[in-house]
Amino acid sequence: MSGPRHADRPSHTEGSPLDPDALEVAPGTLHESVQGWVPQLATEEELRIALEKAFDYRGDVTLTLKDNSRIEGYIFDRITGPSLCTSYARILPKDSSQKLKIAYANIAALAFTGRDTAAGKSWEAWVRKYWENKASGQGVVGLEPESLE
Image 1 (cartoon, rainbow, N blue to C red):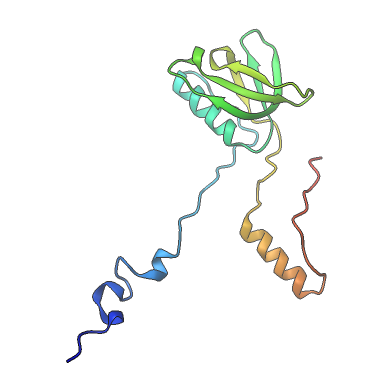
Image 2 (image 1 turned 180 degrees about the horizontal axis):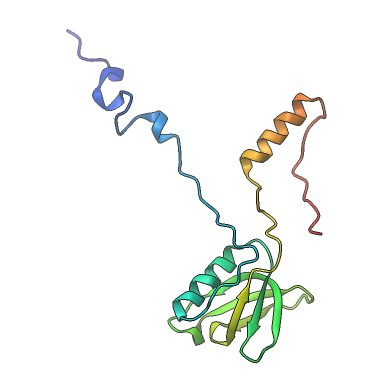
């Protein structure tokens, strides 16, 4: 006497919740373009959201502080606390090697002024370029950084 084959079980047929072809596809991440954006920072929540986007941004931002000074650079870290006075953005200024720690409470404005160095780039685009170059006989394509200028 034989029972049903493992592959014939309902949980392993196409369209079921355990369809391996469907499980192999992971949803992608949608990156919104914020290059050139100058967010309105009317509320504490808007400031926090804008600074989170600035942290995820792959280019320089310009912070205008409440004393009207400006700092242009790359936000490489942030520390979020319960208040704006205990939350900080850490920035590498464009014209200095010094790392600055700026309290959220001191930020009057934020602008995404630098070029997003990863805009339009994806793993899929690199793989496509790799196979196109390999097929045309150009040899092996490497991961070469592009100029920031």
